[in-house]
Image 1 (cartoon, rainbow over the protein chains, first blue to last red):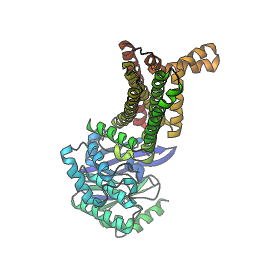
Image 2 (cartoon, rainbow over the protein chains, first blue to last red; image 1 turned 120 degrees about the vertical axis):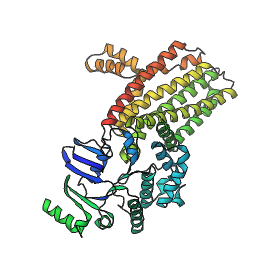
Image 3 (cartoon, chains in turn cyan, purple; image 1 turned 90 degrees about the vertical axis):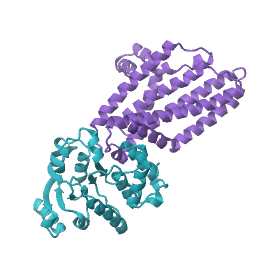
Image 4 (tube, helix red, strand yellow; image 1 turned 180 degrees about the horizontal axis):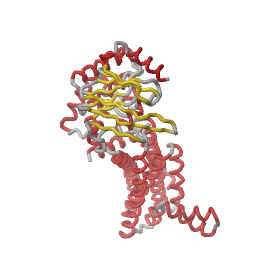
Length: 234
Length: 254
């Protein structure tokens, strides 16, 4: 069964075609790397999946359902690309707020918040206001809020961008753990080496068009394949 | 319901931890205490002066907060991307909007309560009689601020925070002089006439919420008046919030 189907999505913003008939789907339990250069349409695709942007045409199916009912998003975790977290809150308050939005019962809330904090390793900084967090800590907080409802489908927009090697290692380790829990993950990154390490499938996008969609075992060098596709496309 | 209350609570927290809010409460406290000194100069009119001054301060600060909160709180969350962490949870955009409005309303209410308690303390020590009309005036300041808050959110959804602040400020001023604008426009021609008539029809007459003169002369507005004014406010709030919902539903969150 497909956890996610993106069907013929097109989007025009300011008369520019950002996405042109984008099609791909994610099988349950797979990790898919969404590869593309800056401005290729990765973030727009993610935002359309999460109902933040309305497509001009096409549709999104999440477990074969149109996400008209907001409840389906309880099973979907999302990290936007570099969001600004509410900096007037500390990590505990922020995660508690997210639990309320997810309608998590109060009795379960504190243990879930505690587990999420431990899972991403920010337990020493929970009472500090988010505005004092480093980029890596914010990314970990993003993952923590994403994991609160224990979603089965995870959409991660550039979760590794701007991180130092230790930060990248930590986030990749968390993603590896999620992989072993059989979660379905779609994530984008510029660092093809990271994508190669963890993904079971690659979807490539350039100028709003899907230029490749292949299982990881069909290539030994994703960077070479991506570059050859880009050159062929242009 | 839980999500709505939570958005409202964290919006209140957001506002209370903001410098502008603290400065506003501080300025209000200073000015109300200052009214004791200023009242000394109004020989024979001290009671009237203190009452008038404290109501004016409460009203101006509440409207100021409603304009700032409404213009900035939602627009900033949209511009900074914070909203994408919230509305990607299983909640509708309408619920988010209602939560932000409720949080803004709670912030304004908190401000009015602070000013009210402080004013009552000043009244007590200055032997100014505490009347029911004074309490009713605080209620009317609150619902007037809610209309202004809804308008500020409307302008912030279709423009930037700065433009929204200016537009809401303009709306508030026009709202307080709408009857005068209307009467003036009847005497004018062309654009002035159209402007006067349109603003009278489309914008709320905020002077309906001003009962300061009644309070000073210890006259209580009728129950019918209070009910009609409440319904009038509810009508405008509902219309503007429905418009806000339509705009937010269509908005692409970049």
